[in-house]
Image 1: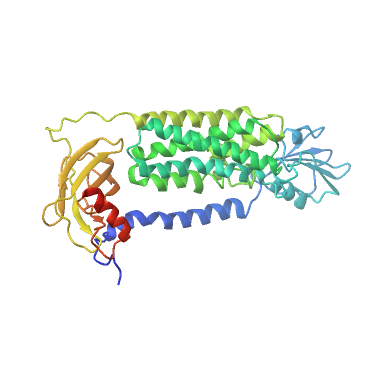
Image 2: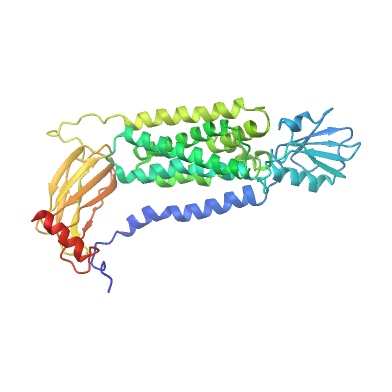
Length: 409
C-alpha cells in the first residue's frame, strides 16, 4: 500500500501550471537543435577568392576578391580559394564544420588548414565543451540556493563567486592539460565573467518572474544559448534568427571572445568582449534591483487582499492541529504567523504577492519548509504534509525518532 495514498493531492490546475514546461522544452529543443545544429547551411559565409571564383558557389556564401590569405588568419574570412593552384585555405580553429563544408562543396585539389585547433581538439568543438560547464555552473548554483531563501544576498554572491572561480580554474586546467584549448590565461578571466553573468541573472530571476524562474532560466541558458553559441556550428552557418541571437546572447559572445583570444591574436575581440561585459553590468543591475529591501508595510493596516490558506496533514492524511505556520518573504523576514485549527486548517491574510517561504512546525513532527509563489489574483490552497514521528510508515528510522524524543525530553 502506498504510504502517501492519503496525503493531499495537487489540483489538475496546479499540475498543469508546473508540468507545461517539459512539453515546451521538448518541442523547442528538438526544433531549434535540429534546425540550427543538425542541418547547418551557409547564411553569411564570407569566402575570399584569389583569381577566378569557383564554378559552383552555394547560396549563402558571399564571394569577394582578395590578394592573400590574411583574412583566414584573422578569422575575418571563412576561407580563401586560390583558383591558380585550386587550393582552399581554411581555419578549423574558426570552425571545423564550416571548413569541412567548404571543402565538400568547392572540391579543391588541396585544402590547407591555416589556423588549426589544438592537437587535443580532434572534433573541432573543444571551445564549446570547455565553455559548457562555465555556462551551467552559475545557473545550477542559483537553483541550489533557492533552498536557502533566507540567505542574505551577500552570501549568495560569495557562493556564486566561489563556484565560478573553481569552475574557471578547474575547467581551464583540465582542458589545457589535455590540449583541448591553448593555454591562454585570459580564458580564465573570460570564463569567470561568464559564470558571474549567468549566476547573477538567474539569482535575480525569482523576484522578477516568480514561479517561472526555472523555465525562464533554462530557456535563456539552454534552449537558446547552446544552439546559438557558434561553438559547434559557426554563426555564419546558422539560420538568420539564430544568428541574431548569437550576436547578443552571452554564451555566443564568450565563444567569440575565447576563439579570438586563443587562436586569432585578439583580432575581432573588442565587439564580443564589450557585449559580454555589458551582460555582466546588466546582471549586476538586475541583482541590485532584486536585492533591494521591500517597502515597509504597517502590520495594522491591511495592504493586500491575498490570503494563504490550506491544510496541514501527516503523510497518513491525519490533520495536524496546533501546527505553527510561519510565512517569510524571500529575504527571510517574517510576514505572518498563524496556527492550524482542530481540522489542521490555517489561514494567513494580507500576504503580498511574491516569492515566499512557509515554515511549518508541530510537536513530534518533522518541520517542513516550502517555497511558494503568491499571486495577487489567485489564492489556491497550499496544503502541507508533515512526517509524524509516530507514523510507522514515515521516513524516519527508529533511531532518528529516539534522538528527536531525547531532545524534547
